[in-house]
Length: 367
Image (cartoon, rainbow, N blue to C red; front, top):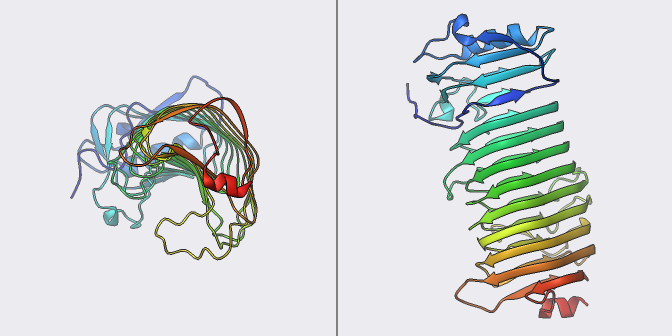
């Protein structure tokens, strides 16, 4: 049986409080259901979960201290408040192909973690390490808070987004550290009222809205707030990315980026409506996605690229009502002169700005 000592997800003293207010819980210890160190605990965990989730009383499932092997589980709905407390280390198979259904989702609560169709929940104190794909996938959920998450993966790992959030509303990500090889947080379509605060990102690709536009049925994104976050040597800071020559006509609005620190970051602030990561795109038609009501305030630190601010908006749907101010970004690269690029946008510039904003040839041409 091939294992790694810490693979895919390690949950260190987490408390996944699902669906309800705090009560004195009934304890369900997996060792009472046949779990033994060194053996697969999937059946024991599922047995404990089945009993606890059917209870009308608050419950807590406990995985005691030690090292435990878990192949794959799908944890279904619960009737009353339910906590899963993991006091030790849970190991996954090193090779996802050895999972029973051959998929990359390890623990699914209905990719290290798939947390879909969840309402009114707080998920906190979780560490997820070296996922083969997205670390946390949260889809079709409402009023969920992720707090004190620690995501860890090599900076060169592909498609290892820390948290991928989409088709959800009222989602908060708070007080977390995300170190990965792709977006620290990626936001898909049909997203509303996301609050991301006190997150440290890096390495990684930053906090991204998109990519958007490839699916004709994609729905609007509105109310995204990123505040008091730090980016360390990331490929981007805060980013919006939409595809050119794509069918979707959704709107992206009410984006607010405030009180951000950039530490040697490429592209600290970027709207890219000609997103084409492999240079194999059809750019004959501009993006049909309207971006509006954007504010960027109090961003400071250093950029490793000369273009510290890039607003590359769509020529077919120019960005509207964009405000930027109190920017202080220095260039620490070795080639080029510090600049900002603004195309198909006429932003309102407020407060002190270093460097001067939107005075590049592209901005003059757009004006």
